[in-house]
Amino acid sequence: MEGAVTRPLRDLGIMRREIPDVLAGATAAPYGLQGPVNCGDIAAEIARLDAALGPDLDAEHVKPGGAAGEMLFDAFQGALDIPFRGLVRRVSGAESRDRARAAAVLAGMVRRAWLKGVAYDAACVAPTPVP
Image (cartoon, rainbow, N blue to C red; front, side, top):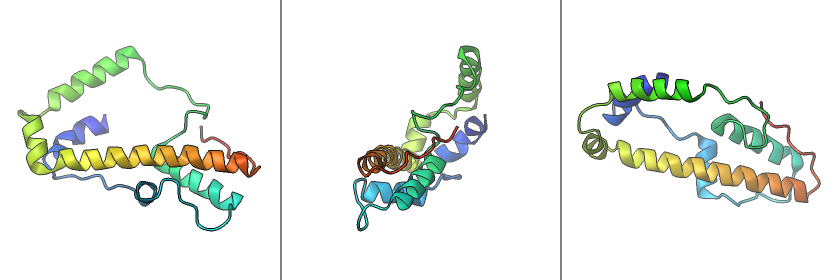
């Protein structure tokens, strides 16, 4: 619900969500490694990516809510929308910031998957998924 309440503020450019450093780094070099493979460093970076992105697909977790909860959330969010939202987002720069954030999230997801492959190939202990 918090996201629905703050969405008009983000649309107007009053409130901004910064891109976490680990995602900015993934955007700059999604397949980069510093030196030889170090299993501890890889596990630490995967943990930082998990913290920024949430659990990966291989994590055991329970899906919150259901269809009724999603419909209620959509109705609540729609009630808070501002008129001419698309135009306001374009003028305020919120649209381009959201595109940059989405690209950073995608790069972080790709980097996390790639790092898990590198860890597997190097016979590192598989990182424990975050529930």
